[in-house]
Length: 191
Image 1: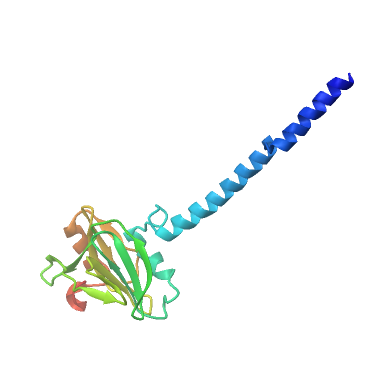
Image 2: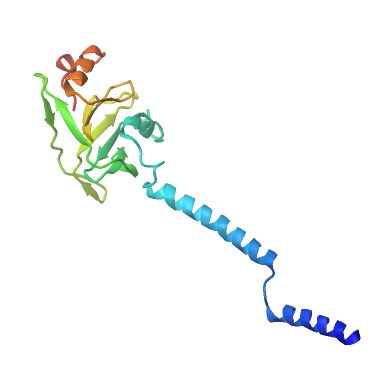
């Protein structure tokens, strides 16, 4: 019996000396690793702007401007490029960079009610250079300059003080513009 006890005690001591981890210790390590990965993954996703939550919709222009600290303090301009990269600018600098869907183009409504694609000039802000495919300006008073955007076979009308509206038919969009408070033939054309 004594020998058996010594054998059991010797086995326990050899396990303790061998440096093996217990199941509880392994579970604690896995739990800590999971927490660290979750924090790192969440931080990286929010900064890249490529996740679904950060890929803004062009119809949510209101929130893009309103979340800027310069909203209603300075004029803000949102520039978008053909590859979906967008720059929110204000006071001559880039305030935020994020992603919108690719292929959004800016259009103007001519006085004869034809739509014309806008060719924007090359822009350099700080060290960043790009040629926009569209731009939307939000003035210091919170109103946006009227703008027509074309994306994914849909026409989007950015109204000065209402949420942007989406149309599949450009004739319907122009008719809606004429019914709104903004009349392109009296106030210039949208650009």
